[in-house]
Length: 73
Image (cartoon, rainbow, N blue to C red; front, top):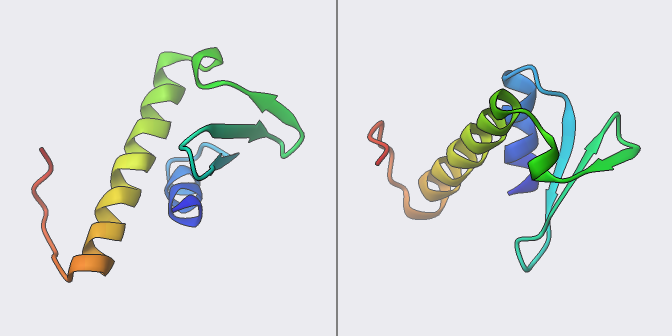
């Protein structure tokens, strides 16, 4: 999951290290040193994180269920 999110963040030109643990607590590091919270980012940066998470879940669903869809609800 974390690898997929990071891949999509790089595609969206937002170079941070995003990590979710087993309890879905996020750790976001900029320049791989400074830790940030989700709330500390601007609305545009939050949107990039949200889209990356959405695309990552879609990719995981595609790999897990052999389902390929272009419909997002």
